[in-house]
Image 1 (cartoon, rainbow, N blue to C red):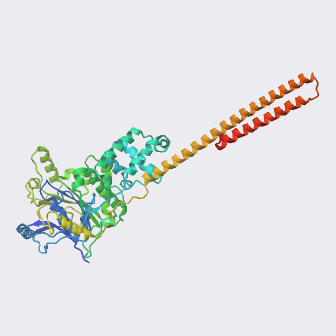
Image 2: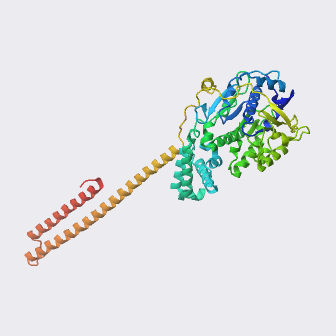
Image 3: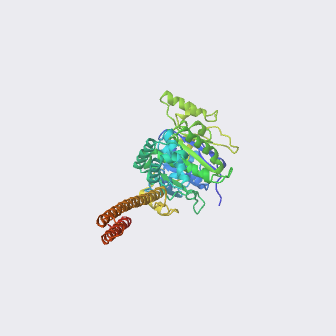
Length: 521
């Protein structure tokens, strides 16, 4: 199988702008105001990567990327653009597409566990403050030390509840955390549940190999992730998924250096959501991953309205820049246009700052990296027309594509293996059983002590009674015998009565002791 080593972006007056696939893992930026053609640009790049044998993941934010699976429809404007750019091999065709959906409705379900997201992403997802973030780090450390799997939100809720109940015992090893902080986190988790986040958090976890496939002809599969619902409900969950995926790729893919083409490409649409209100620790982590992940053969392409939506340290890592039109009606917007224009390598034939505000739909200013990794001079071009449909696939077309998917039904049903919730429940039951057993032991010892005390009392009373009867018998004997020391018949009879009484009381004492011990009267 042979694959192309250049990617056609567009051109003008028969002059084409191509990107070398060896530079495609140096990342890129697609920017422009709403309605200027960013989605189509993302679509044509995905097609070109697919033809080069590179698997792609792209988010469908507005619901109109699914047309990648269907061939384009003939139109005079397409013919005009083909002619203007000088394309000789244009062919209308669909692409190999696998549909995914965090909610599992418009594609295969996508899941990750709480443990895999980690404390930093979970804290960012919940908008936790510094103190609460510290509690979250402690929770993950406690889970690791105790072999507790945090698969879903229920596991995390149960762990936090257990931490609150055992705070005094845990304080020595994990620091102090208050019930107020834990309660605030638990309330935030309830809000997250209202956004149906538990659908995404769990197992089976998405396997990276299922995203990096090629079809039978060697074309890279384009993975289309529907996020139309989740963007409206909770955009932070969408951002969290993309950040988790980027981290997973960084941690699990081997080093490949500078390959002839990327191993995988991701398009981050609405990229500003990754950085809005993100703590510095998370932004620093993103910058580090973007800088290092290219050595794993992964290309990341940010899509947003303005390059200024991306932190400067991240923007500096992006080799390819495609800039659609920007609007400049206010002083702030005019300043932004000036800054964006200065980020391009100057071209004496292009007034970059002026052209940015005058570009038509489907036009763009473009700079790519040459074979030495040096940015080329900015060029004003027409974006090439996609070979697939501009716009969404029908429900029937989507359903047919899902039915033929190589993924099958391996992600359809959620798993529920033993995790923190079950283990903490088992520990609570064991503690309850131990407490009940200890209470029974204490009660038995108490009853035995009381029985022994009662037996001693009865024994003392019996002894006193025996002594009293003996004294009375002796006194009576003396009286009748007139003081004689010899034992009379009456005296012998009285002593016999006394012994008999003592024996009877003894038997009563033993019955009392045995009755207390064995539950009888």
